[in-house]
Amino acid sequence: MEPYSLPDLLGYFRKFTQDVVLYLPRTSDLRQLAEETPDTRKTKVMHYCMDGASKKKALCAYFGDFVFLPEETTDVE
Image 1 (tube, rainbow, N blue to C red):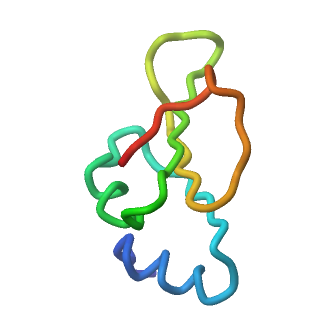
Image 2 (image 1 turned 180 degrees about the vertical axis):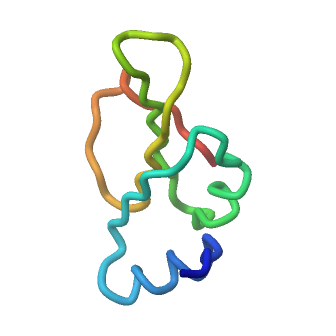
């Protein structure tokens, strides 16, 4: 199985829906996510930790029309 680039993945998924969630490694580059965000939109990014530890384990990037409580998110533009 080959790795796929972020633009390839999002391009494929956006053929079906504009609302896409990607579960990504904690070391993912937020600048790459921002590059795939349309100028008129924002991408929500949530960092996930295990057992209340402060060390990040993963992150999810939400591209599309998702609704969150303000204190739960960090915007990437």
